[in-house]
Length: 257
Image (cartoon, rainbow, N blue to C red; front, side):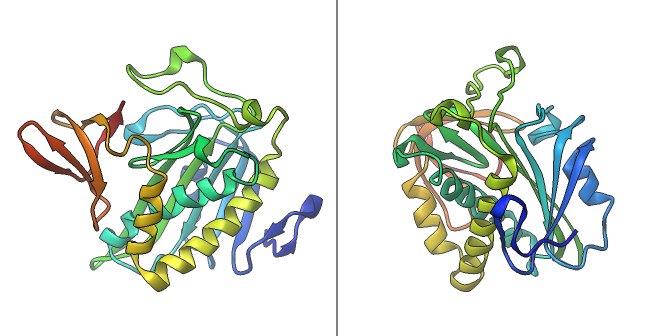
């Protein structure tokens, strides 16, 4: 369905974006793949996901009451710039959380694709792209947020951060559709800013909220582990670590504190 202006319950929706709201789906990312002919940027949301996945194919718990959503759109760019949309999405999530959390310092951004609340994992982001001729024609951004419930501790991977919920922080339940409406508005704003100004200003703003900047972290790639001081994120969105063997630039990894 198309939702513009005032939505259900009085929430607002960004012009030019559509919303498909489902009661249950295997995963919103899979649903986006099944809908290749979306005419406009479209948010696909589900009250329940039964087979959601996160990075590297890991299971992602998605019970009712949390946010399970995928934004599918044509970014009009190449793969390198499309990859930077993880920063657009995470910064939009940061801005959305500030509508609920009084302490701005409690919300931080963990490279490459997580949002933390008081040091625990609140949200994760997953990107999938498709295109030909060096141009991405469909970018899908999957977002999961622990609004009201969190996965059990036994579901954590070794050294993974404990999950937290937004409801725990603010002391009351969070309406997923209200949260989504704020997120869609913030994403539309950040997307327009990114397209107009490039990655530089967004990168600077993201780094101001980066978790463990200047501290020792470990990046686990598909082939090894690299431990060093988190120096920065470079102009291509890559992690830069100062290690005992010199400076390392890492394009993709899981980060552990």
